[in-house]
Amino acid sequence: MSVRAIQSNNDIRTAIRELSTRADLARKQGRSDDAAELDRRVRHYRDELAARP
Image 1 (cartoon, one colour):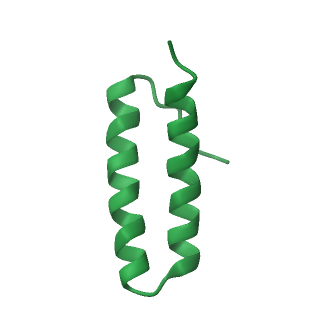
Image 2 (tube, rainbow, N blue to C red):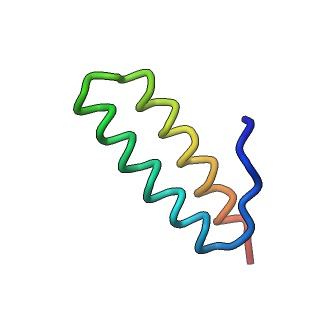
Image 3 (tube, one colour):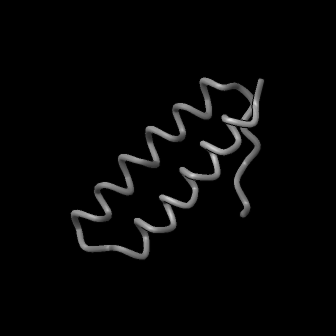
């Protein structure tokens, strides 16, 4: 996955919020493939955040 490096926990939380909002919108618009990709990115960020101390 080619995602820019995010430094702070706050930046990761912001990215999760933004991507989750976009995924919800994509689902409402019937763009399930886009929503699935956004959900994968959210999962990646959540995993990264969970791995931090």
